[in-house]
Length: 264
Figure 1 (tube, rainbow, N blue to C red):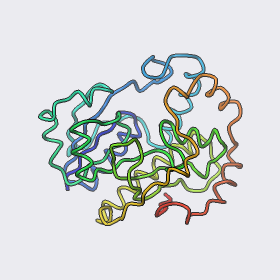
Figure 2 (cartoon, rainbow, N blue to C red):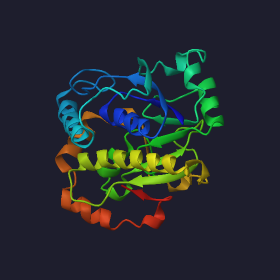
Figure 3 (cartoon, one colour):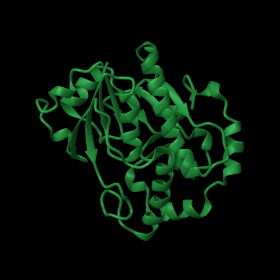
């Protein structure tokens, strides 16, 4: 099996590459690169004391769950590009990435034009870190925790569509119930998404799952990157839920309310 992944370069993205490389013969990666030190180095996230504090927690949790950055396995080929450049690439450049059995999108920029049309036609799977249709847009699991809704921390694996995060849902991936730091909970939701995707790929069931249309009437929040400000981050750092409260809320999840809930 040959898999093409459109993704980024943080440890959580590298972990997905490594996991898929264990069940595929060849992995082609189109990797949009940005700083691995958000909040410390100005990039898409501004360098401010609050952002440095917030993202130090994010980076620590990411390393606890996924480990440090590492080299890829031998069956992985990588095309590194700057974040935001993907839609400027000529399709000819991407030719080696466009003859795969499966296409996965996780953490890339918004894909448009001919590449979007190709991926939609070839049933590309997108990992949306958030439980759709309730939370859509940017940093959805942060906003679920900000709203004291840890039951809606998770991931939606859905078919890629021309609209943002609104394709037919294949399954939801959810973190296990435990008393833990909320930053760790968010990363374990990512890990659950990886595990669920690898499971359905390795069993051959992924393309047998019937997509479930999203009901936009159930949307609780649609957020953009600009909504995540110093003020919002500081309020969250000062008031986020404790681990015991998170576990209590997670125990109340009704798994029948999710699409083919995968807990891992």
